[in-house]
Amino acid sequence: MTEEAMLAWVAGLIRQAQSSGTYGTVTIHLEAGKILRAQVAANYKPPAAGVNARETGS
Image (cartoon, rainbow, N blue to C red; front, side):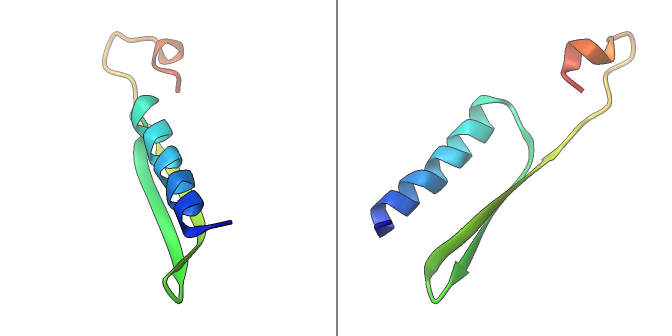
């Protein structure tokens, strides 16, 4: 995969996390300046008082 394609792939992961409203981190692992892998870790917030957990997607 070309460097441009790898950057587009990483940008897609970030775009997906943003559009889905993710709370968490996206970690990009590099080796010798090349993208080796990406790790997406989501965190979940407890529902607000009076909100059903099913409504928050938790």
